[in-house]
Image 1 (cartoon, one colour):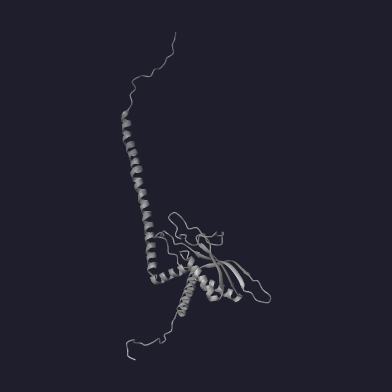
Image 2: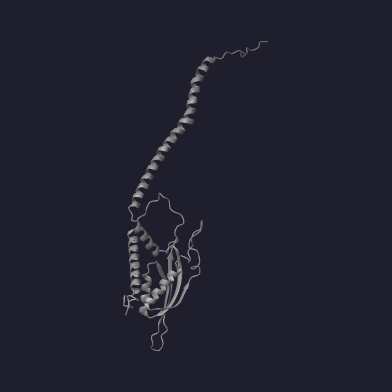
Length: 270
């Protein structure tokens, strides 16, 4: 019986480890170099680039702050305080319900109309005008979309009066010349004419006085300074003219002329 020749693997095969050991050293050095580059060099490089970009941003911020300081130092403090007072008279930071009623009474007294009814809408008196933390001030009256800013509130004063035609025109003119921002709504005129006699006009209207609470938080120090527009400057000039004219009128009305009222020296002999 002839058996096929089968080649068996010899158990003692010799492996040349010298070549492997000669390649292991450079391969290990390359691996270590890659690890050092990934773990040490690359993070340092990226941090250096980010630091350079942050330094450029800081330089720009410093330049903007310097320009803002120069601009603020060029303003006159007295003029700024005066403009703040005019802006407060134009749009008060408080509701100013009683001051609005007082201006209505003064306008009525100077125009010759007779006030028969002055009512304030509920919520206009006694409510706090400063919003608490985490809350915003809601308007006293509903505001129509697109007609008024959402951050401006208003109080409603319902007025009824009787007068002739010229007096009501003067009253409306005096109300319009008020320094505060106001508007008139629901103006109705009625007259009940008797037999050949002219009866007075009965007028009812709603006077809206606008106000806006001051912000409870200061803005960022890096926020740019927004200059006043031409319209805002002209509006402040008009308010200044109205306030100065009203103050001069009040001072003239309260002026008492100097007249001889008696002896200059009480203890002088007759």
